[in-house]
Structure formats: structure tokens, C-alpha cells
Amino acid sequence: MPSGNEGALTLTIKMRVIPEPDSHQELLDLMKRYRDALNYSIRVIIDSKALSLGKAHKLLYNTLKERFDLPSKIAQDCYREALAIAKSWLRSPNRGRVPTARNPRLWLTHGKSYRVYGDRIELLGGLRLRIIGWDGRYDGYPNGDVRLVYRSGKFILYISKRVPRPAKYAPREVLAVDINEKYVVVGNSRFEYRFETAVERALWYKQLAERLQKKYSLPRYNAWLRRSGVRRRVAYFHRKARNIVEDWAKKTSHRIVVLAMQNQYAVAREDLTGLIESLRKLPKDHRVALMMLSYRKLEFWLDWQAEKHGVPAVVVEPKGTSTTCPRCNTKMRGNGYRVLKCPACSFEADRDTIAVLNIERKTLSKMWGSLITPNAP
Ligand SMILES: [Zn+2]
Image (cartoon, rainbow, N blue to C red; front, top):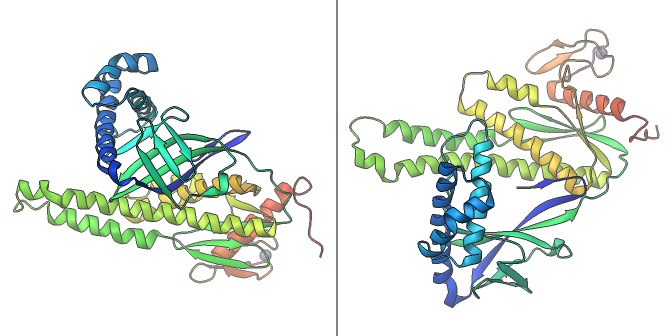
């Protein structure tokens, strides 16, 4: 997860790794023990409210070493990670079930439990992995904590890096971003692009999950069938839908921010909080849930990508953005499907174009004189 403060950004770099042939099984066994130890520790910490490192150490250190056969440093990393997971779960206001790690994994503290040299990473105890496709963009910055996950037969390594926050340029123009169920509309008074959303694609997996769930909830399917792979497949389809949206949000926001950076634009969007709240009031269905997820993810990744690339980002008040005439400020009237016309100046356009123009206009007036230097006519 990306995060940041005033001076620095924490990035996570993902890469594939392959254990040296003779250590493959040993590593996988260690990662399975770590996962089991982690799940055990999370429960112990929550049950006994042991919310400090000292308490967690006392309760868990020996058990993790003896019962789960973890090396001392890795046992420490394990209760440290369990503590972080337990705390964030306890903090969350609408928490569901206690979090559980499914995949074999390892979490390694910076500087103690691993070291990187060349294209190899060596774990404490001498297990070695080869890094495939090293991402060298942040080589100049120190490595932070590392996560190693085993998923679908592959070992994936996540290295965290602290990098300085890039300085922001003074924008020459505005790139406005508007989102609806079907499209993300990006542009200003001179051009406009539309990117499709992932709602439709993700919905397909939600419907698969639902159909499967319905089919096997009939009484004639006995308990053993319900216990078999069906539940796992239902969960897989739900996960797949979420991943499609997340992936779409990351890619789309990256394209938008790169476009802005190349042209020295500020990225502007409206504050979607109110829109998301009003969706929350609708009857709960998969489409609405996916739209809310898409809006939240797009906001998050747009802001994050803008920070990472030094692109100025502006958030404007959403009031009237899709109904006010961008030429003369009059309230526009419906004139067919998603099309509005201004009764005063006859300007006519579809809702999304109107929103883009208004977001541009609001941004210019918000930033005029401070960041934006007006264009030559
Ligand atoms: Zn008008």
C-alpha cells in the first residue's frame, strides 16, 4: 500500500523471484509455517489485547520458535506483523471476521532479516532467491521492509522504498477528470478522451458468483457439496471482480497522470464523497457496489499517481458540475438522453462534457493567480 508524509513517499516495488533449486522446498515450508504462525499470533494478540511489542513478545516468541519452528529473527518479524494486522483490524469501525493469511508468506524487517546483492536476495539463514526483472528505477534509495508471498505457484517479492516526494511544476492548463458508470471522461475546452470503466467486466464475475451461490443453496445439494470447492470458487469470483476494478483504477489513473505530466497540466477532479454517499443509499446491488468501489479507487490512485509524478492535483466542489452551463452559468435543461441545453445561450452538450468543462472552469478560478498562468490567446 502506498502512503506518505510531507517529505517522502513510500513505494512498493513488486517483482518475481525464484529460489535457488536446492532451497525451493525449504523456503516454501518456512513460508507455510510463517503463515500458520501469523494467523495464530493475530488471534492470540486480539484475544489477550496484547497491543505492545513487549507483550506480544512475551506471549508469542517462544511458541513461534518452538511450535512453529521459526528462526528467532523471523519469529520477531512474525509477531511484529501480527501486531500491525491486529491493530488495524481493531481500529477499523466496521470490521468483519478476524483477518487470516491464506497464502504462504514471509515478512522481513529491513536490515535484519534479509540483504540484497546484485540480482539476488539472501534471507537470514542462507536461503537465496534470484530476482527476475529487477525494477531499477529506485535503486538509489534504501530498501525498507520486504514481503514475500507464494501465490499460484509463483514467489512474488514486494520491497518497500522511501523516496523523496517530487516537486510539483506550475501547470499551464487543466486536465479535468469526470467519472460515470460507463466512462472516465478526461479533457478540457480543447479536447476530450473517454476511457471505459471496468464496472461491466467486473459485474460479469459478480454474476457468476451469484449464480453459483444460488444454485448450491438449494436443499437437494447436501452438506458435503457445499463444503467442497464451491465456496472457494464463489470467493474467487468476488475477488476477481474486485481485482479487475483495482487494476483498472491503477492503469487508468496512471494514463491520466502521465498525460497531464507530459503536457504540464494540473489534474482536476470533483470531490466524489457526496456522490459515493448517495450511491450508498441506493438498494444494495452489485452494480452500485462496483461503481462505489470504482469511484473510491480512482480517487485514491489519481491522487497517489499525481504525488508520485509531481503533478499538481486539484479537487473542486461538485455542486452543479453536470447541470450548469459552462459558458453563461445558467442552469441547463434536459434535451434527450444525457444531453442538456442552456435556455439562455443555447449551448448544448452531453452531461460528461459539461462536467469536464465545469471542472476545468472551477479549477481555473480556484487556482488563478496562484498556480495557473493563463494561456496566450
Ligand atoms: Zn449558457
